[in-house]
Length: 138
Image 1 (cartoon, one colour):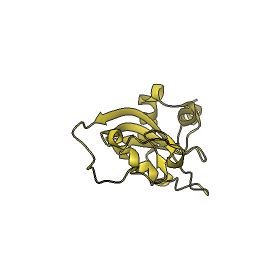
Image 2: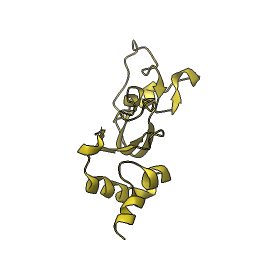
Image 3: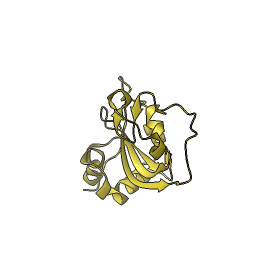
Image 4: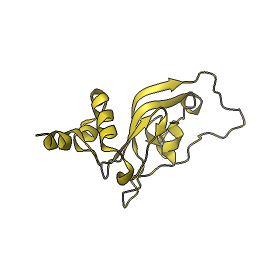
């Protein structure tokens, strides 16, 4: 997933549209050969820079030339308002409605990456988290 995508994404469940979504990077792919043409206007994002984790209006400088060289291979996009999380697998964010998500796949992802995720995602995330799952198994 390109960092720039978070400039356009908002939580589909929140009344306030949960913008910006929080990005948790677990694994990055680097593409050294990517460069921006000199005639491209910077910053590439107009509202939010996920690479620097700040609103564009709050930045003194941008790192667009650096940002385009990376894509998030594995990670999580997380809404701090409603606590929904969406996995990023093989550079693809899987932003699906709850009824289309597969519980076992989501739980497997959480278990596999437990050490790299925040407590908010692991323990309180929606639609699935490791606490609710452990209660069900008692």
